[in-house]
Image (cartoon, rainbow, N blue to C red; front, top):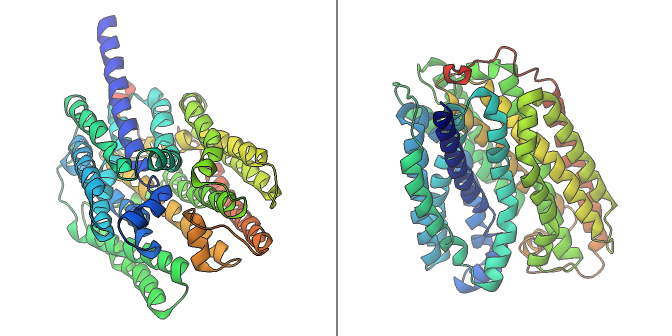
Length: 483
């Protein structure tokens, strides 16, 4: 009996390790190219307006594809989709590394992002299938911080690899890791159950078109400003949601089952994730612009100053997840968001010649808050989901989280362009320019205003988190969680 229990626990640890590494790989590659833009621009004989899509297309595709692959995992098997995602991600990481032009690199990034979405959107569901209920929070403590922590670690790793090895190795490094991960996943990650339902192809197409047009229009508005084409694209994107909604209401096996949102815990937790992304990722982007554009630090050094907080978050997240299992997600996640607000408030002290300890302190405080929020909120989402819909729930959570990250990027660029020229904002963002001529104060004023707006996003997230209710009440409990 003891031996059997030990075998189960060992298998759970192996599966959790595979999931965390997979999520980290997908997440790291969402930002690892950031500090490689100057090197890629020069090596591929391109320009910044083209190369910027190496990161934007990855974020966009991940947001669009998450819900689709979560639902496909419910129907055809979560492990099949997750394992196939590892293979696709690994293959196209290699293709990105050998890409001869900027356009081919962007195309390969699309397929790499699809592989990343296949992994990220099914990881939460696999955890719900694998772990008993009392262990879910701890498991999500690892995977919940994976995506958010990975996005920041990508910036640091991109700076190290690009500086000391070469930009192509930010893609090549995924290949040996991906091969080992694929072998282990094929052996250990298996499906407990699958739903025998039809695939809603039309619903998937409508959702993909809507989200793509909305995000693309948002990025274009941030990049080039308001114009008729961007506004029409944005309007059509929202308009497509109308037929999508009615399609999903009528179809027996929809991409998104809107009745899921009748569950207040699920609805508030998913929306809290989106507003947390809106309010948090933008802070990192803006700080990078401050450290590079105002202080004149190198991209690599600027990213290192933000690292301590994310390391702290990574260390504490599993413990906070265990705490969530014991006491519930609502209070822990809400306190985490309040602490994140306090950390961003510290950044309001930043001026042209402020000590870098302000950045380190703010990073540590927000890291603590993130460690409390991510595992608790993710656990609440999955515990409030229906059996057979864990893939869909995981995909919806990743969709809303990705929308938050993309929205943060748009907010930051718009905020920066209110104080400095748009082209200069992009050049500072990738570390190719520094503010001169006394306009640093104008940028700092704009930065402070953007921080206040981002804090407001976190206030909304905290209110949603606080009013979600207790996830132990009215929650569907899987049979294998009652073991």
